[in-house]
Length: 262
Image 1 (spheres, rainbow, N blue to C red):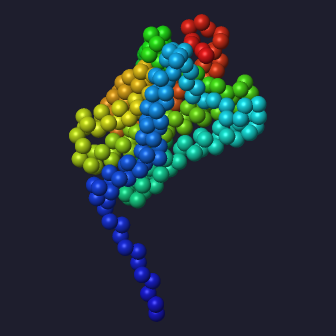
Image 2 (cartoon, rainbow, N blue to C red):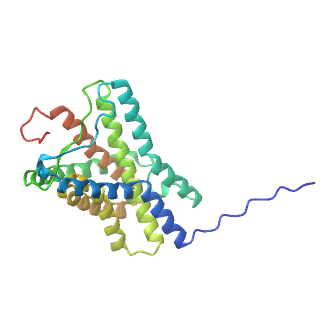
Image 3 (spheres, rainbow, N blue to C red):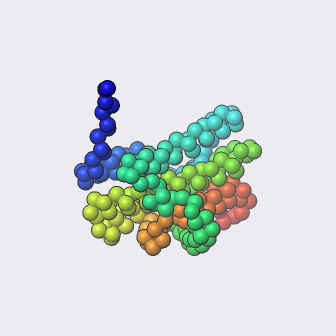
């Protein structure tokens, strides 16, 4: 009888492999976005227009004048944007755990929702004040959270975009990054600084206000994640903040005097 050879056990990853894995994940996701944001901000600084007169559109049309094709493109980019989260989930499974180890699950729905709503209320208002102040002072671009056409799918797409941003950023920059750098032997202050600076870096395309505001948000989120041990309430908070920003802008732009528009 021919015996079937058994697969060898997967060796525990070395620190070098974990470091390489982390760089690959970031290079395929928000680390690359940080580099792109730096290039974009450099371009904005060298423009003849002042920063406050330039526009950063977050959810723009991808097929102007062709709403059905535009919708397909929007859904495609939302789905593609979640692939780094799928990759992180796969890598954790190879570690004999899952995304649950980061607290990304529905096991505490009401508690996560309550905590997330409280964090969103506290950070959302202060973030808006910071943005308005930095934009008025000329340190920030005018941010247009929605550039989508006024069609039936605009609000649903903005909601999906808000949740995609929240899931991607909190799973990768908060849960996964902090787990990996801790496994690499980093101290807690170093891990906090790394996560917060990364979060700020990929918002630099918005200007100095976007950089500083998101670094502060990153510090707060890291401290709350350390306290709660769950990424889910912070996903909820982030999604609520982005939902208010995206949908609120779509509904209020041009109708209120205090909201900067292109």
